[in-house]
Image 1 (tube, rainbow, N blue to C red):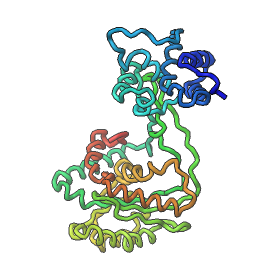
Image 2: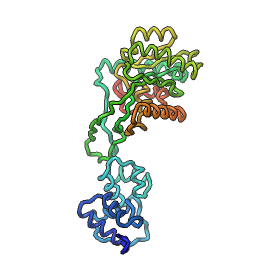
Image 3: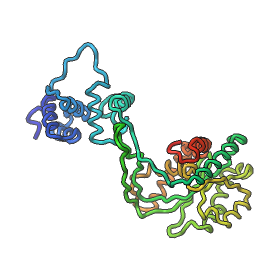
Image 4: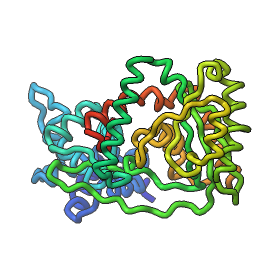
Length: 357
């Protein structure tokens, strides 16, 4: 129906001007132009730039006369265009903004930080309100482990096998970091509301060392990870995996790093570890920021799966298997090597939690 007449760029600019005055956003205006003009419609970034001009008080739909000096990508029109985009979606990344406006990543960073005085923020989360005695315990353990590393070096780290359990769900919402937004420096930190996770889930036990994931054990649905299950995991899953994949590790002496859950501290479990001659690395209570699975492996594993709905546990299991292969192939799990920096950070924070390490 729109083929009986030609719609010029001036016509489109006039439409943008009118709809901008009506309070429409750039996305809606661009969609309407595409519906009528098809491939002849101006692109989305052009809509944003013209809206920025009109909102700044410029009324003309004609291009400004060019002086001998070209305008820079960080001029007022581009600053206004970036601001317009963020008004619509504060979660946009620098790369997404750069693509929308046809400018460089560095220019976007300059506009955001220097021109708009904005920063990207997420809400801070801590797992536990540490008492002074708990902070002191964390500090003492961090100092002790750092001192041991200074004596023994990387061979000490290479003997560590971190073990922990986690739920894998058929659907998990995105992370706070994935929903972070751009705000001005004076703006308060945003609050993120928890969204419901899927009830279809499976407990898994993971063990990994400096070279990658050794074991990913899928606990049968309906079973609990009690001391008997964990003991059998050590005997029937972890030790055979180490013997097959890291035979030298059995000769050097395995150092197990797991948290202080009652399952891990049970006497039956302690007997198995003593039988094998495996050392247990000291780990302070309430310290996921000192546990490689918590601050490293689980984040790397789950992030690509967040926001994806799996129809059943079989489909979820296949996706987990593929992610583990990718992690090992690309050597993405660096949590064991990062322990030294973690210990340093805990010491620098006098035993308190480290927001970033």
